[in-house]
Amino acid sequence: MAMADMRPPIESGCPDGFQYMHPTMRRNFGLWKYHEDPKPGVLRHVAESGEEIFTVKVGTQRILDIFSLRELTSIGDEFADGYIRFTIRSNIEYYVTDESKVDPLIEAVEKLGYVVGGTKNSVTSLSHTQGWLHCDIPGTDASGVVKSMMDELIGEFKAWNMPNRVHITTSCCQINCGGQGDIAINVQHTKPPKIDHSQVANVCERPSVVARCPVAAIRPAMVDGMPSLEVDEKKCICCGACFPPCPPMMINDAEHSKLAVWVGGNHSNARGKPTFQKLVASAIPNNPPRWPEAAAIVKLILKCYKEDARDWERVGEWVERIGWPRFFELTGLPFTKYHIDNWRGARASLNASTHIRF
Ligand code: SF4
Ligand code: SF4
Image 1 (cartoon, rainbow, N blue to C red):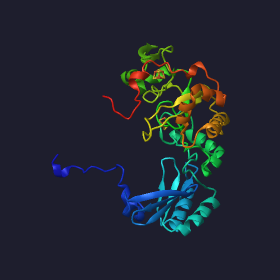
Image 2 (image 1 turned 120 degrees about the vertical axis):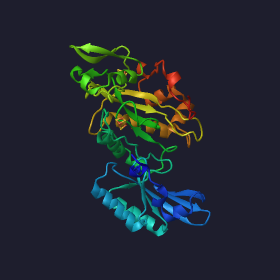
Image 3 (image 1 turned 180 degrees about the vertical axis):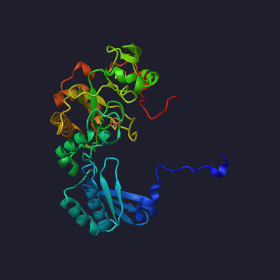
Image 4 (image 1 turned 60 degrees about the horizontal axis):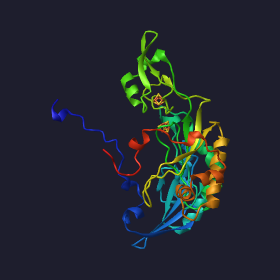
């Protein structure tokens, strides 16, 4: 094919964010002098040039229908010069240069039932792995967990009550997104996968599935004269990694796919190394539509953190200072054999810093 006939590539990557920024932010990019927090949910940034901009952060119900989006964006048109941004935690942020518009904007969003907050030492919105909308491996409806949990914690979103900011994360499978929050609510499979042997030969690339298992528990096998797979259940750690490449290895289960709560994760290395979260409560019933058992445990941990941590300690720093035995004493959560990380491979394969190993 001659070069002239070749189709140009379709640029489908992330667009340049500058074109969407409020002009005040564009003009003062990298030239901010300081910022302050006039009240919960509101930030004021002041630039070297003397220009200032207010950010109003609003919690949403996370999965937004077109009507709610229209309502929220028309408020942006009326009070925020048409400039909004969605944060990674599905909050919406409005940018306002005229201070006199901040309170009317807050009034307008609250009138529609939205909440303003999520800044400074609050519990901001839970991060969201909405697997049932877009992903192929969820074990539960993380969006529902997030919504019901945020309903319970709405007071903590709107106030500055916590020793430091609290990031809560969820995951709807056991292996991918959603970890490393101050508190994380993750799926926990407790039984090895059940294999539908009639489907394996049609659907799965058996060598990839065998290679995918972190503990080498999967072997090729012939079942009823057909090529299939078998799982050594003594080795299986019920991670669910075999399910995405091989859906006949069913691991999701209404009764045996549970939730677990993990504590103390941190991606950032601003004040110390990034940290892994640790399991503090396991086998919590996956109990829709309000997940009361998981919500009670998260609220209990937050209560103890609020009462016992020093100012500006993150959850992980608090637990490191008081020690894990004291954490279990304070919260009253049972410490069981399932809390002991005895996986031999962890030391060699898990990164404990931002350095890349080759
Ligand atoms: S947590 Fe798992 S199931 Fe949920 S969106 Fe992420 S990869 Fe998909
Ligand atoms: S669930 Fe995980 S450990 Fe068990 S067989 Fe599948 S990949 Fe291997």
